[in-house]
Image (cartoon, rainbow, N blue to C red; front, side, top):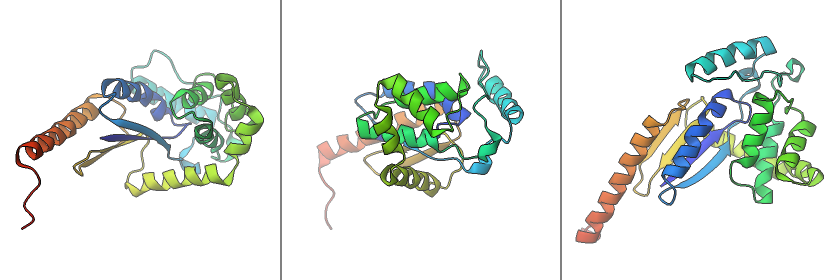
Length: 218
């Protein structure tokens, strides 16, 4: 089966979901294919000030029982909600063979733990280049390329096509045509229960096919 994680680099709920994503990858290694895709937030989804962002961080931090509070230092009201840069940089990393989570996590850590203003393309590129040893000039050129930006907008459209609006979102698909979508949930148990059920159904179909073959044509 395939598990697709729709993520926004500046979403605190995506940050809180990262341990769940890691556990899913470890638990179902070899039994599922994993992929992450960018789902950009709308400009008006972002906090208008650091004080407002801190209010949201207190809420999500207490809900997740976090021992630390996230850092709102990345918020720049003058951007008017334009924080696409770290998302384009994360996507650009794929052009350099970085399809795992390292680059994403470096960008999220820099913004939401260290308060770095990664809404700036210069800052986002600097974080990525330093964390993974990438060439800053080539990385920025890729992040600003029409190809990368089109991929990000396409994956965002795919997210909206699921008829959900909360990130993180997880799309679960198996080989017998079943699909399940979770939007806004960051905890492990509901995902595990659904994945286990889908894997069990897939195995049952395979067992039946082994014993009885393909269905009659008429």
